[in-house]
Length: 157
Image (cartoon, rainbow, N blue to C red; front, side, top):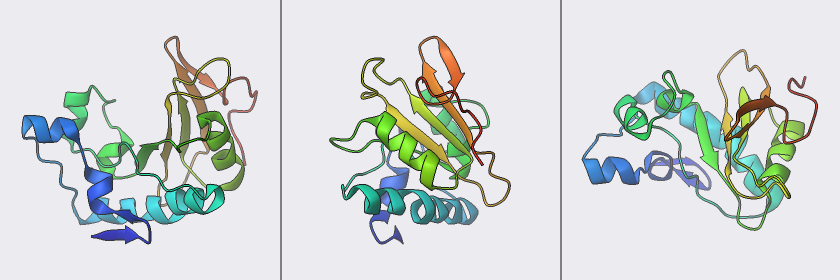
């Protein structure tokens, strides 16, 4: 099932862990609608802006998959509201800053970037139907901090 011009349901539900352990990872209708919104309002604009084809590393996770991965209780991934991704050849800090400056989102996390150049790790981005918080964080081994690796802004908008 195509969720948007460049992204499919299979891409947004793929899980090696679920396949290895035989865990079901199938979203319900409402979760599919949330995934469509993510694709249309986050992933497609990113692809258009950077001109780089990519496939998300994590989208929807059933509660069982999320638990097996050690994901946060109540993770937006379990509602189809969050996606993790990176772009080949683009520093994740650059990607996260572009999203922060150009798109509507609920939560944007630069996850485990390289301290020197902002590469490495991945970008976590979530979107809800109403009431997006525009929360911006960086996550390192030491925990979460506001902003994007040295930025002093944690709330935009």
